[in-house]
Image (tube, rainbow, N blue to C red; front, side, top):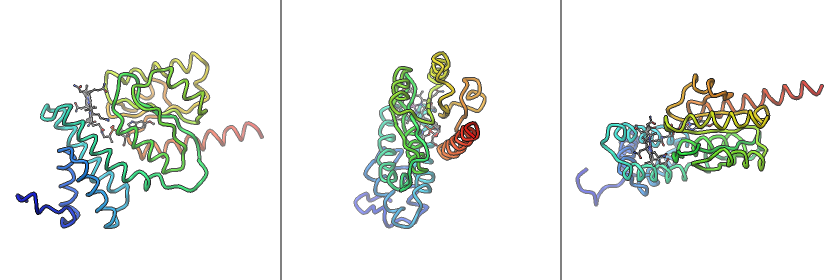
Length: 235
Ligand code: B1M
């Protein structure tokens, strides 16, 4: 399309619209991302499909060019902003649940790290699965985690880190829980692009979550297992 005046997202077939959304995310066009997200939903796409195919995939492409020095921080901030605008449209759909909470989660990005898109997505998906989620934000130091644990008494503590330089802070948090003899009270789940299973084990987490869907599965499974073992201990 050359004539921008005539450009109408609603006229594009699904595959072209999704490709256009990748471009719009790349260019940080929040209004277009909101519009594209709404069009796909109106066409009957499930919220998780819009999220995965249009938004997360678009952000993956941004990540590649950021890594390769083609995009820089200000541009990626605009992309992140556009991604968040799309996620805001999806949020009520992903978080739709009328049921009683199946557990509580405190989640935050560790100290020194301001990446929050993945963490927000995990929080949203956990809410959608029926958890009550307390999102304590970014750049969280140990004291902030401890205060949130004390205030909300969750089943799960979720730690997010996107930088190789900040992921070791997860161990600081878990070690502090151990020192204060609080570790066994909580299920600790860790996630973030640079982590892996081995790292999760090495820092003493109960689970490493590669993505939001796995975080939900693991959260459900571990909370259920913990409840049934404490029920068995009572009987
Ligand atoms: Co940054 N950044 N960034 N960045 N950034 C990365 C992470 C990087 C890989 C880019 C690259 O080089 N390819 C690189 C890290 C390299 C490394 O450490 N090895 C990097 C860098 C270097 C930096 C800066 C240092 C750049 C600079 O200043 N020179 C700087 C650091 C700032 C800081 O934190 N102190 C920086 C800044 C930024 C922006 C501010 C511009 C922006 C963040 C905006 C925001 O989040 N509000 C940004 C972005 C957007 C990215 C990329 C492009 C995208 C991250 C993202 O949102 N992904 C990223 C490249 C990449 O990851 N491909 C990059 C989409 C999201 C859905 O995925 O976050 O992986 P993800 O979350 C997934 C899973 O990881 C998992 O589930 C999520 C959903 O499925 N998960 C969890 C995550 N947290 C979890 C917690 C759980 C469970 C699962 O708890 C239970």
